[in-house]
Length: 453
Image (cartoon, rainbow, N blue to C red; front, top):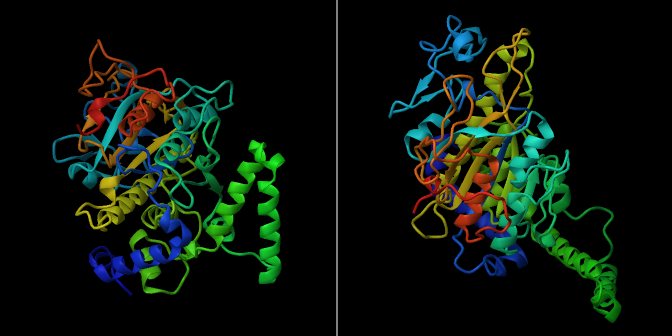
């Protein structure tokens, strides 16, 4: 079996994966990239959701326990609680430039040091409701009640970058909304890798080849009759049918057959750290890597952590390890994308793929009387990869109660004349970078400090 180092360095394995991807493209290979918007950078996206409301004190936005502790939390309104953790060593981590991270930041610290990742702190989520916070980050718009008001950022990006990929937008266990974009930009939503395999493989019972051809010709003729041509619904259905036929006939399932007994899949399993295909963070990260690098999707959404709604003393044992497992899955995804050259350009897949890690909000800065943390309006996110200026902290939460502070969008530094950062600032920045400007209208400007000039 190949080692993890061997997997990252072996041109044979990378070549095998590339060959597998090429074989899997079929009819779509001729379309790939053909409809990308003019002047748009060649970008791919992975949205990594931490479900339940992460504790940013344990990861992205910590406090030095020498300055913030039980002796002064009544004045600072911040209680790190690192000494109460039942997992890890409870020690904050320090980046090469002195930046502090929480005890459970995991493998992401090395990517911050290497300039591959940046962190946005002091975001205002403006809600304490899971559905509202999640949907606001996904769409960049405050929901109406609990109902999403706009399309996902991934939908806008997939729409703008074209339908060249077989499944331009793919989502594993993450909500997706398409309110106003073409049908092809809607996410194909699955709950597991097995679900995707069922969608990509011909299902029994199969019609005889001749009968299948007759049915297909009948549906084609029906879609081409004058009445059907006047029906937007019928035309959308026919486009979806043709895409599904090509997709099932293109052997894309081989890219996601994680249990296959091949050297390529053995190396993939070892690199991401899983033994079988399930819905673990490790499998979801591998799923995203295969979809992006296999030429299947432009945008992939995955859920890399769950069970983070720790209101009780389960916070002490569960919150940190579950977060860290998600961070480590993202770290392995970054390494996988960095390990492979992008289409003979001398750049890597990571140079063309933007990764966004987010949650619906954070936990409170103070522990409650049950030994856990409740919902906080303050949030954070991580972002790295294609177009991102890595190795920096954008924004800040205050040293009293961790409330969001205003930020100069051009520099990323706190400024009394700046703006409070919100999820829509992040999506607006991604949309701006590919040329979408203020479509959709998210009522905020981009954050130039996040992106390379």
